[in-house]
Length: 128
Image (cartoon, rainbow, N blue to C red; front, top):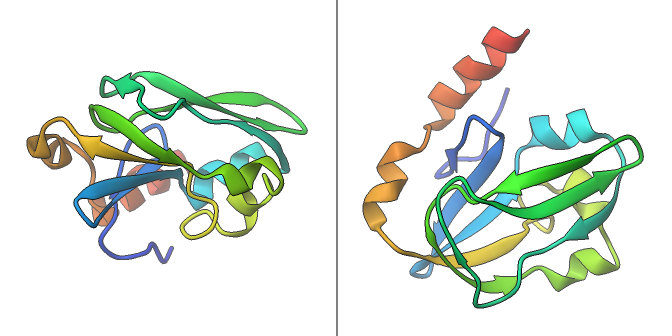
């Protein structure tokens, strides 16, 4: 499995990337494959303060609705409003155009609690 470099992961299949003093959050390729055809994304409100592990977003597919959890604590500063018209981008481009939201970090140390690509890959192998 080839995961993008410079990302952190959660056991619940979210990814996070540091970018310009903020972090970008999305779901992994594994998660989008499990959900199948995504038809709707309910994004968090800009300005919402999130605790690490808090359900903050919902992704609906043709077979299920799934909660998405904040990988770290912080404040939502932007949402990917393009997903309103293109929810399928989460399936097609989970690490690029299919990102969900950007946030500022409450504590930079929270990143150290996340999984590396290698550790996340190991978790996926254990699921096989």
